[in-house]
Length: 238
Image (cartoon, rainbow, N blue to C red; front, side):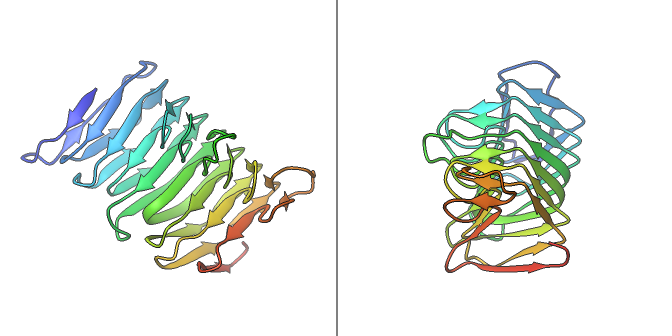
């Protein structure tokens, strides 16, 4: 376990050795900078609310698992991720097969760009949502992010919920994502602001798959499910 909790330096650089399993990085008051690493086999990053802006760049998270929420990352603060790959991460009972976001304020931003989420899953039998990213509190900004073949009980790739969050998606791609119940790719329930989806494609996503029709669902939201009070603007080539 690596702990970054120095209030003096407010910075910490951690190198996660490739192919070394069972590592935990706890970011309390410092700042995590992680670049060009591969985190595999139950390596887990926890970003606390008191941490500074943590930055993950050029990093691969593969085959990590958490018992509860956030198979690779649990973020309670501010986080920037770029040029990253999240592959085959999972949770046993909780939400967010790759990432769980539960910040202290809706103004805390998790920004992800030029990254891919492939084959991440939550438990398909415990009502766990969000095969790739679960957003409870905070703002999620996605730019040029691909979600492929992620699975969950609900919200195959992403699900947002509670009043204190919203999501902005630009130049995204959702393909072959699947949920057991509803919202094959994306479930939007956040009421913290206007959710926007711009120039984003949805193809061959399924919810409660009883048909092979692309973006199909027998319960609603084969591609996208929108809560009754959520505000969503879809534009461009979405």
